[in-house]
Length: 440
Image (cartoon, rainbow, N blue to C red; front, top):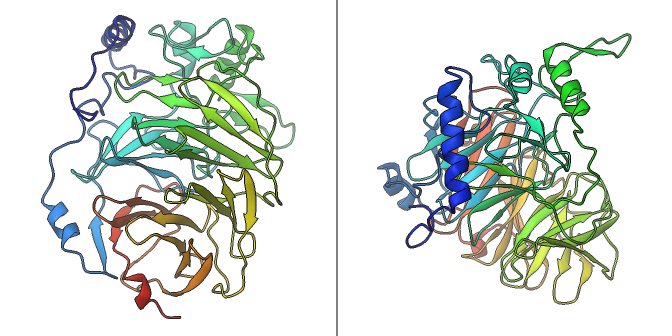
């Protein structure tokens, strides 16, 4: 079962949608379904594999290479992706992590699917589960012609079963992914997909800049049906781990532009999501389905491409790109506070491209992975003082891209390292040493 306790039964509408999707998959033979039904996550968490004991026995400061996660039996493995430091988002309910975000722009994998795919890493079985294989560049036009993808009354591309087609949502993972840790549901802050410039399979003439090809024609047909013309306020995209559907629900309230490449996280104490960029910030209440702009005190964010982490002990959100730009947002004070960079290790980078910042709940410390400089650093959030740093061990043979998440149950970090848009990834595990032992 996926949820804690008995998995709640699907509503009648969800049952019909699932049956409809199953029937469509059978009716169209080998033509790949838009989504994976039934959901590959509905029976999680899975049984524990033997590697869990290796992880539990891992010494402080040690690194463990688990090797490549087992492939999804139909769609293979998740590729490496640049600007993907935040692209693995921990799900305590299913005991794993969601993974999304492309590497090379508009990249098409050898099987014809785009790298606008969605995955789940199953901790217990050390395997990939495919949630959405990406845009089927060979069959998208036929899917549109046959009505398997159509546009609804508010401009969303949908399936006959009612799911919303994600298309190309993410240029990269950046900070756009967050998980409601109470429900295990992934949320993605992104506009509607099908942007031609980044869309896998669209041909573009460099001189005339004109688009062509089947995917371009498919988008043109959807636009004729009203794609993106609803001009309504939407909430973040959601993935339903029970039905396997992607959803883009309408939302109450309004959302002003908060600035490009914002940070997006879930606040367990508030039961809300927090969105912040250089132009402002807002909450999203998933229960009410409503956006709420925030008037914050203090100096806001600068730049873009942030690393972000929630300090659940103090109900803060740490956001920044490096030691010079790090700030935290205090939910209680509704204010931004700059973190003094003095005493910080030099050359830290924890933007989504080259590292990340994470809250280590067992030791109550902020941990920075700076893969570009191959250092780890630690910040005491109680005093907002840097505790020091040390080199990333030579044991860790990192590749071009590294996505990280912290599992508080096992008290370790998982790092998926791979080359950009390559299927050569390996999953590493690291247990941080006792923080007082860090060199000062």
